[in-house]
Each structure stands twice: as C-alpha cells, then as structure tokens.
Amino acid sequence: MKKPLILIVEDDGLIAMSLLQLLQKSGYDVPDPVASGEEALHYLTHFPVPDLILMDIKLYGGSDGIEIAGKIWKTSDIPIIFISAHYDDFRRARAGEITGSGFIVKPFADGDVLSQIEEMLHR
Image (tube, one colour):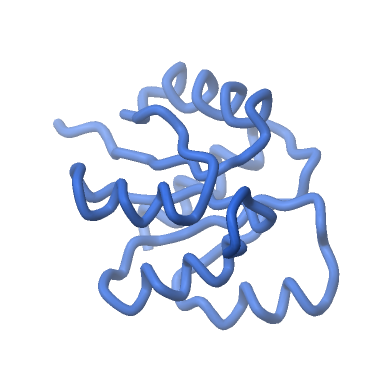
C-alpha cells in the first residue's frame, strides 16, 4: 500500500524539521521541506504530486501561503492544511476561501496535526 506523500512548506527550519520527523515517524512519505511559495510551485511541477500539503502562511519570498494555495488550487485539488501563529479573522477568512483546506494554530500538538491530516486525506 502506497504511503501518502505530504509536502511541508515552512520557512522556520526548526518547525519544518519537527514536522518532517513527526510525519516520517507516523508512516508518511515526506520529501525535504521547502521554505517559500515559489519553491512549492517548483516542486509541484518537477516532482510527484503530494497527497496533501502543510502550508505555513508567512513564507520567505514575495507570496504568502494563502496566495500560493490559491495558485495550486487553480490546477489541482490537493488538500492543504495551513499552519500559522497568526490566527486572526482576516487570515482565517482568506484561508477559508481555499476549498479543501484546514487550519492549525502554532504552537500545535503533534496529535492535532496528525488528526487533521487523517481527516483531510479521507474526505
């Protein structure tokens, strides 16, 4: 049985590595995390399409995670879970416009991440 492939888009190296270890330990296939929206778009055109994306909202580069998710959703239906310490009504509303998305607030518990992933993968 194929393990779900999850792409991590996170510009904080410690959080990215923590998520990578958590997901690998939980049996997911996880490529090296990317730190910007532009790297995420590049990944999607050159590597296997992930089953799910964990996307930070504030990223390196000119685009934020919500903007990048909108671009991704124009060409695919990959579920996206936003992860952010910036939990305000404006960001929540923008993220809510992305069909098939979820939201996790930093700091997060490992169990919350894993349950949200399972929920999104089985929709």
